[in-house]
Figure 1: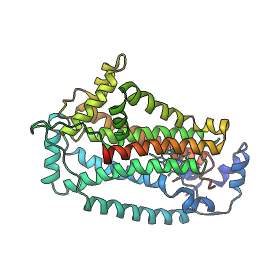
Figure 2 (figure 1 turned 90 degrees about the vertical axis):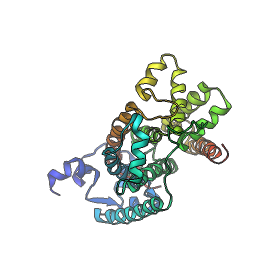
Figure 3 (figure 1 turned 180 degrees about the horizontal axis):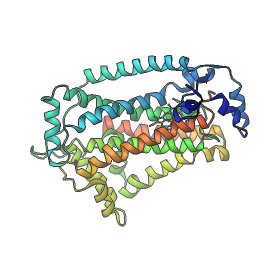
Figure 4 (figure 1 turned 180 degrees about the vertical axis):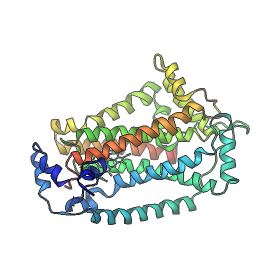
Length: 137
Length: 208
Ligand code: HEM
């Protein structure tokens, strides 16, 4: 790997710089990965054991009137209840994704501080709507 | 690992030496790694679920049998469900970390874009999994998705490709199953490998 890195000729300054950082053997990373994996799996098992995943209402049972979205699309469902489908279901989500895709470009246009602010506002709005739907929807 | 190994894909994404800065917890908060771990658990439990789950009319019945009769069936289903929710959350948090440490900037733009695609696909995977539960709730969620597609010009055909023909009481169809278990999951698997390869091409994780 060192060899390969040595071969890179056009690395920009910041990479050059980080390339000069002190290096440690891979095992240092692996040890951290094992600990992280262990803790994460422990948390997952605890969640699985303590919170039962319910079955939904059987399609054979009498129809109950439900308009429930999974929580991942809770924000969109909330928007759909306020505004027309083209806006809530297409324009707003796609526009948000477009902002995300072009974030590196915005970084060069308006600077890193504004990128952070734009990203934070966008995220907070979507996360906020998700919570609104989950707990008040 | 010999020279051969160093030039291989694994040798590239797992170099023998790591920069000290990248090891610090606050460089990554392990969030990318946790997302990948969730994907591994999802793949293993997903393959186990494949052995019993039947998409379509039998979806709900097959899941309730799996849940209550099959040894460890409920456990495997729960693991799959919770790992799915945790993956969505950790992928999102990982994205927050990347913006915070400004790692979307040049050399890493392509990986940022790959990441946004991964984020979108992860959310859609979670939604499609919900439809596969085959209960009335999934039928309702499928109806909303279908209506969104059919509101587009020519959207009827798209809706049929993606959703098949779900009933309002059951969102599980063969189409949705193929998208969830094969196409979307396969795309996310492949893009993750590309993502890991690009991390090294971008010079590895660079802490703030
Ligand atoms: C399936 C989902 C994803 C997985 C498994 C994944 C995995 C990883 C891993 C393991 C790293 C190494 C550092 C770390 O752990 O933080 C990383 C870095 C990175 N990820 Fe992701 N990621 C995913 C989604 C995303 C998303 C949604 C974005 C942004 C939109 C993104 C952008 C990046 C970038 C730009 C880097 C380089 C960071 C740096 O150099 O500091 N990834 N990813």
